[in-house]
Amino acid sequence: MKVAIIILGNQWVCPYVNTYKSVFDRLGCSYDVILWDRDGSDSTAAMGYSSAGANLCNPFVKAWHYLRYSRFIKKMVLENGYDRLVVSGPHLAILLACLLRKRFKGRYIIDYRDISVEQKPLLKSVYSKVVADSFCNVISSPGFKACLPAGHEYLISHNFSVDAAIEALENNPVQKSVAVPLDILTIGYIRNFSSNVKLIESLGGSGDYRLRFAGRGDAAAALHDFAASKNYTNVEFSGFYKKEDEAAIVAKCDFINIFFPSDMEHSAIMSNRFYLALIHKKPVIVTAGSVQEVLVRKYGLGIVTADCRDIDVQIKDYFSTFDYAQFCNRCNELLAVFVEEHKALERAMAAFVKL
Image 1 (cartoon, one colour):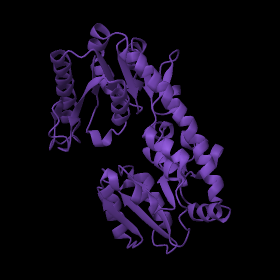
Image 2 (cartoon, one colour):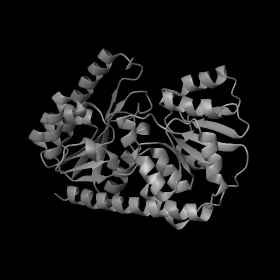
Image 3 (cartoon, rainbow, N blue to C red):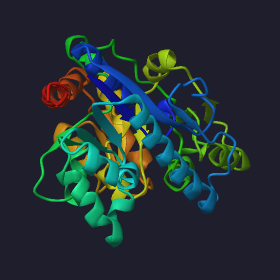
């Protein structure tokens, strides 16, 4: 039994790959990761297609690389004789539709994490057929169900380490003392200039807050330049960090920022930061109208805002009645739900391997 896990970028921007790896490892199943090395960070990957250095902001260049990568995938799949495929993202599902439905019908998993090209009228029917012929379909957020073909079961794959989640259920961290300046952390891939700049505008220059941005991304430089142009000395950018340093970075914060744009895609997703917040027991800031808002309100996990205008008052009101022990219990209640959903995914993957 040999499985190919096929992703649309570098491994560092696709942490969910580790979920599949860990489950396949436990099942004793052989697998390879076929990836698109966009930035050179996976230059040693045996199954990597490289476009490092290419101007992917140019739509024609990007489309050309999409086609070349799809041909690379087909070549790797046929040459290596894989028995099963895990295909991430609607772009790849559509580009590989003929291969999947003709050679792997009932022997592939579709993994869905972003609303994208499958919403276009000309591509909807293609994607629907790929979904119908899969072994199972995996989504990273319940918010996606409304956007996908009806009549199919969708399992949820949470963007976390289940081992870390189980450990977090058993051990709450020592409470960090809340003191001014309050530390608000944006961690991971730094994108979405329009939403992050609203948070900076609202709290930048205030001695009551320290805004930290840890990670790299396409909006990091512009946000840094904006904060510098306003002389906001309480806004910091630390750039790339090693995964093993992540827990120490999170431990220092009081809030994790997950304020995203108010559009269909961002309203449906579950952010990696949301899981970090649950595991490390940190309150969050999320966008009104999002699937994350539903969970934050239900479990009392932080603040909901539409535009960050009154975020200063909301944060101070939240901490005025903050009970850390109760907060940890609420985090664990939701984590336990997520762990059970992960176990359902593991059972499906075990059946997938044993076909």
